[in-house]
Image (cartoon, rainbow, N blue to C red; front, side):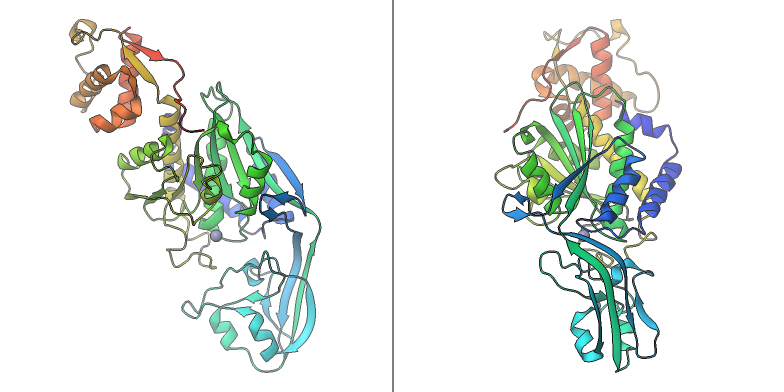
Length: 444
Ligand SMILES: [Zn+2]
């Protein structure tokens, strides 16, 4: 058992502070589904892990979609009749409707108002709005600020470009002994939003750093992509090889103080679904496993019927279900160091299950082997005497070449690490042998 133990050597609080500091570094960047914001974000990730950047030209067909024009923005503001800026992109990049076409014009308030977006229910917050696939322009502001606007002429300026260019995404590939892959995917297309976007980016980056340079069974592929169009583009470019994905996780909204939520893959009974459910059951925070639905983040694309990949989605608070979602209140105060570190730990524990989920054969299947003679009937100490012996007996009994260690953990009710440690000890004592080809293929 490797990854989680490695992390446990560090202090949870300091790991959390590091994760939060990384999110804070990424926070001010105005990201979108294309453009320099995502490029700058990927450059900061590349400072920490090996990352290949892929650029795909505007107009490239990707299944039923087309790679859009590239959007970049330098400045935007609304200047009131008194000459003062009432909305300023430099103060908060959420102020601009993401993907706004350029405009520089003067107009009366009545003409400006249809281009203003607010949240009447949360009058102090600025909403996050986009207009990716319909050319438009607009501003987002607090409802209170909008109510305070006086009649008169307003100068509106959006210094943006929307032109042929490229869509950019990042891919970090960590080769393991097997070419079978674990896919970890997160979206990198939201501007200054912390839980929705940055928490996933930070945790995925640290997870890749944890795995990098280690002896791995699986190969790992981390995708840092614009939501929807990025996943569609990646799938279109890798259509022939996605069958190598044995397990996958979309990471999003995993930095807030809420309990864990795991949305199962479309298959519902994939090994990743069982591994995550098992890990969540045996950790201390509240958690809930949700059935698959064809709405959400990029698991929608990975689980589209043509692919049906075993990819689920790990969250804390469920996207769309917390009031701060897609507003200026999803900020660096909304994500906290300890929940970020806790999410990294849960991810590490999930990967520990996948990496170690071997099947074994009991080398002494006719009645129990005499454990006492081998010093295996006494515990190595601690409070869990019963559990340690119990884990050994469960592993011996169910190691018939058919049951994986996760099967045994589920059936015994014991946590996977205890089952895995027992299997290691019994193997060392010649009582078990591992069955080759641990990753029994399921489906494609
Ligand atoms: Zn979002």
